[in-house]
Image 1 (cartoon, helix red, strand yellow):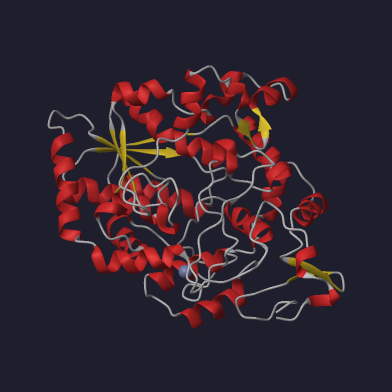
Image 2 (cartoon, helix red, strand yellow; image 1 turned 30 degrees about the vertical axis):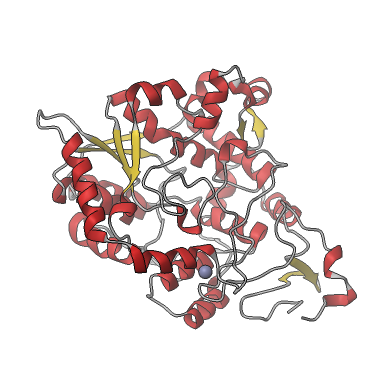
Length: 426
Ligand SMILES: [Zn+2]
């Protein structure tokens, strides 16, 4: 490895506790800077990231997990387990027996449809609204209900406060999705409590990278973690809910500084832990019980709920059907590219390589072509949403670039290392 510009690699500043040596998985091309799972409730500006594991052969934990999964899982047995759970909870008195969350994307359509029409459940679908619906996202959401055939509860948090929190989160964390994710995570359990429905199903398992919190079978997760339960236990033990970080600022400070009522932040706070216990709420991952293939979800939702892919390619990647309902979405991926060197194409390709849809080499070519592409289609709306000027946002991005990932060459930011081996220091 050549050491760029006479600079010792060890002297380069490394932000967020990322690994100082940059590596790419030999199978799926994912970068070793990718954060593992992030506990959003402790997401203050100084928190350090835990990154995904790589073994001595240079293979990431997600690829290793996938290998074991392909070899060892008895999917018939898993499906039987799911049917047993459905039999235990199924209602025949006309009431709902489970909650199926989603925004009307291909995965949520697939999950809800399967529960209702294959396993004979009576799901209430619930939706934590995107920041700004895209036209195609809204249409797919409506089709989910009108063609797929579901009852739905759409919850939209206070738009003024949501914008403020998103702005703070961009300024403090360069993470436009943190408030959204916090609200979304705790939303499902809250709906379970509200409607007295103790069973809910997420779709795909999030633990493909082998989260350390996996409570069930290592990287494999049957149950969702109870979102914010650690924090709500703390609250029960006297910790102040005002200590909770939203957008990198403690809630108490937000209330005082920005003229926000405690009530306007409720949607982001975790469910009281005692409610989980009292109501015996269980949230499962459907992906534990049935083989989850994003491409199959897409075909299924086209056929059964009138799902439509984007007529244009999603910026930053090559696909047309992955998370396309929120105008802010592209910026969530773009900021990840700035902070961790991991764009949207890299994530999409890694998943498709593991599912054996494309090869490692094809993935590399797609990454070279699309990764880190600036999402300009909704840039104006994004800036207006977070009340920021172009120049301010670009300067912020630069502030969050870690020196061990980025070098400025002739006034232009270049990556020091790429999976294609054409970085400044490769
Ligand atoms: Zn990998």
